[in-house]
Image 1 (tube, rainbow, N blue to C red):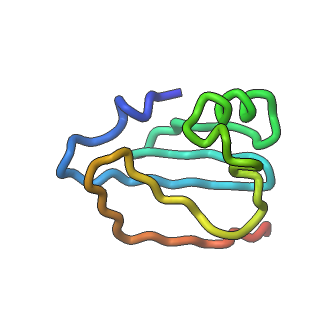
Image 2 (cartoon, one colour):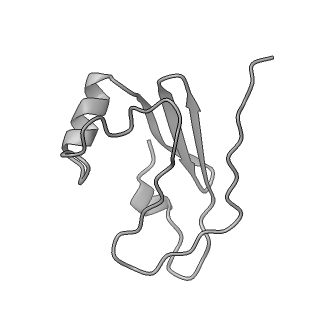
Image 3 (cartoon, rainbow, N blue to C red):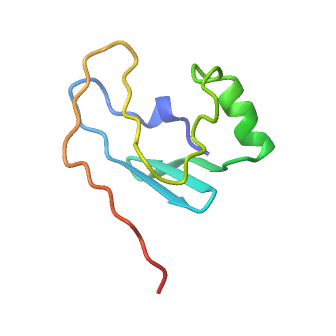
Amino acid sequence: MASARRMAKPAGEWNQARIRVEGPHVEHWLNGEKIVDIVRRSPEWARAVAASKHADVEGFGMAREGHILLQDHGDAVGYRKLEIRRLFAD
C-alpha cells in the first residue's frame, strides 16, 4: 500500500481523504490511493494501535458508532467539506 507521507500534498495544498468502514473492515484513501486496509480486532490492528500514540487508550477505535477523531501532528491544520454518510446495502 502507498505511504501516507508520500501521498500527502505539500503544506498549503489540500489533500482529499476518504474513509470507509463496513463492519470491522476499514479503508483509508488519500488523494486517490489506498493507504490503509485493515480489519478491527485483527492481530494487524492490535499491532498498529500498540505502535501508535493511542496505545494507552482503552478500546481505541472499537466503537461501532459515535464520534470521529480529527487530529493534527503539532502544526496548524484546516478541514473543509467534511461529510459523514451512512451507506446502506442495496
